[in-house]
Image (cartoon, rainbow, N blue to C red):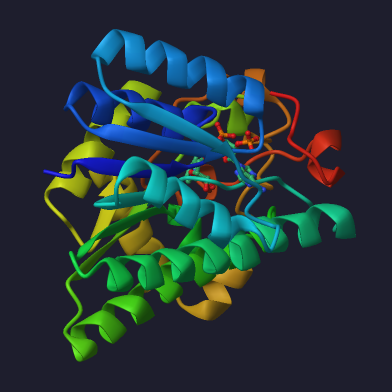
Length: 290
Ligand SMILES: NC(=O)c1ccc[n+]([C@@H]2O[C@H](COP(=O)([O-])OP(=O)(O)OC[C@H]3O[C@@H](n4cnc5c(N)ncnc54)[C@H](OP(=O)(O)O)[C@@H]3O)[C@@H](O)[C@H]2O)c1
């Protein structure tokens, strides 16, 4: 059982839900994200409700000082047993707004690599071993036309984690690497829109905790999305590239009512892309208004 847990991206959604669950398991926490007010409030609530130590640090994964700040958190909490990377953004961007695309690459690709590499180095220097768990997505499975940067950066995350598993195995380092791939989860990332097959946050968070505790290498959240992605992979390139994923008339992510009116069909890949919505905040180089 992990004792000291660092969670990057703990100010809302999946990261916050995981913070509550690991505190309930008796772990001390170090939580991070860009919104200091949220970090302070969450740290104070969790520490009083679960009688564990919770420290926090304002960290932007896009900035070069992120690794140093992670290392300070680790020292302050007395070493890290488990690092969870839940920081990420996701937006549809059919207009290919360059600010949205580049911000997604900076956060989900560069920021991800910056933090994960820093933690691998940290765990090696501690000499105690440990575990890294990152929330990628089912969107890693194939390129999604509605959100090119999001799906491409999630694929980078999944490949990066696989590469690191090969590296630690070859080197004999005692580091476990877990890739969590959820489908739609009801968090602020979806901006209140109704998508097919959306999982309630508590259900998804419980399954993620189980996968982390079991030290799985890859965990799909949940089995329905695993089946769906297996079907996606089987589709030939020509079929996939002509499939209007996210663009079919009865399923428009911009229209929550229309999407909710039709029952989800897990057998139809066109109905279930994990492709979040664009917003004006997406283009801003600052925390989204959530
Ligand atoms: N919700 C879904 O349907 C879904 C499905 C599959 C995968 N995921 C993935 O799960 C992860 C968590 O998403 P969520 O659904 O929980 O969304 P969320 O509620 O919007 O949470 C995102 C978290 O990431 C943090 N973050 C964003 N940019 C950051 C930056 N530059 N530096 C540091 N922290 C940053 C946010 O904190 P601040 O704003 O305070 O910085 C927040 O804590 C993401 O990687 C997302 O792609 C989500």
